[in-house]
Amino acid sequence: MTGIIITCALTGSIHTPSMSSHLPVTGADIAAQGLEAAQAGAAILHLHARDPDTGRPSARPEHFAGFVPDLAGGCDAVLNLSTGGSAVMTLDERLAAPLAVAPEMASLNMGTMNFALYPMLARDRAWHHDWERPFLEASDDLVFKNTPRDILRILTSLGTDRGARFEFECYDLSHLYMLRHFADRGVIRPPYFIQFVFGVLGGMGPDPENLTHMVRIADKLFGDDYLFSVLAAGRFQMPLITMAAAMGGHVRVGLEDSLTIARGQLARSNAEQVVKIREIVERLGRVVMTPDQVRDTLRLKGADAINAG
Image (tube, rainbow, N blue to C red):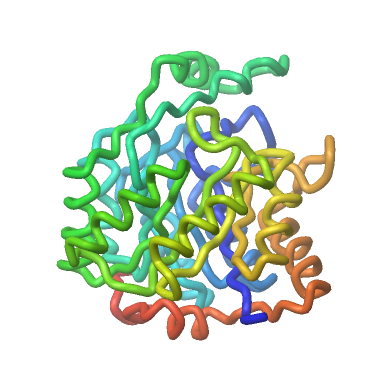
């Protein structure tokens, strides 16, 4: 099999600080966990920011500035900035930091969808911040807006104008066809790095047959012009990404996607998840790719071409 890319998503915008004391919130914590994850074998770091005082998801460039320079200067991992931010943010808010940084990679959600987080309220907990519970409760009426116009704006402003390549996040089968649409329009070029996302209520369920079907349709739509990676939410993380690795795909771990390292056991860091999946994929005979190998494979512009600050 070919080499395998390990992506690590450090903090995200889904989990709240009360759910785990190990979730990085401050710039210093995000930077420290990112450097540790890169040392453990993560070639790509998927980045969101948070308000360091409240832990609330943030898209403000000054909050990204709390960790992007340290990551860029402290490791050679590919920095992949989220354009999703949080589903409650406007597109202008979501794009502020990526436009300023002009990263090698950026994530891009390929369709509008429901994005329901309220099932996480089923577990009793003491809330550390007054925004957390209402944030989750309101997600029963939340639409994550990613229209074709939004997608084109991101592809143009970050891709065409700033040379970024994309992690195309596909939460459903329809998102593959939207990606094919933009490929046919000539807005994007191969190789396409497609992230199949499982387990978010509003998107695909974390069923093995969904993964095999997504690969089958992606093969039909993109042939040899794509690579697929898999992320799965919560307890489905390791089983489904292990399946992806066995199928020749790539994998994503991180506290954005799951707070645990084993059933009922919180992960102490992002690096702990990287170490675990690295051991698994190497036992499957896969060779973990270095950041420079990823840059060559995905045809990235290079770390020296970003505005790290």
